[in-house]
Length: 85
Image (cartoon, rainbow, N blue to C red):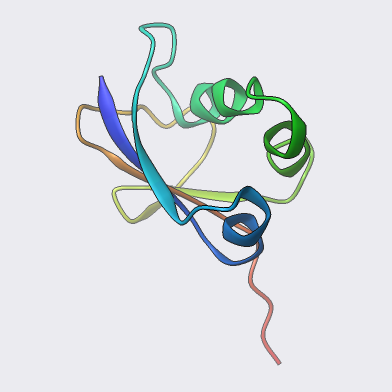
């Protein structure tokens, strides 16, 4: 399954890219599994997408949780929590 992954704010800066298109292995079917799969890249990926780190996820421009299923051509975004003032 091919999806588009977007990275925003501090994640974009830390990972050095705004987005990418990836071909997922069959074992990756949810937003949480995607995050875990990306962490396997190691280094800054493992650090920035670590479990317990405050990172929000959206799938098809709707807030998602780790169990949210992914579909072909889905757009998934990862971003830090936003605070206002």
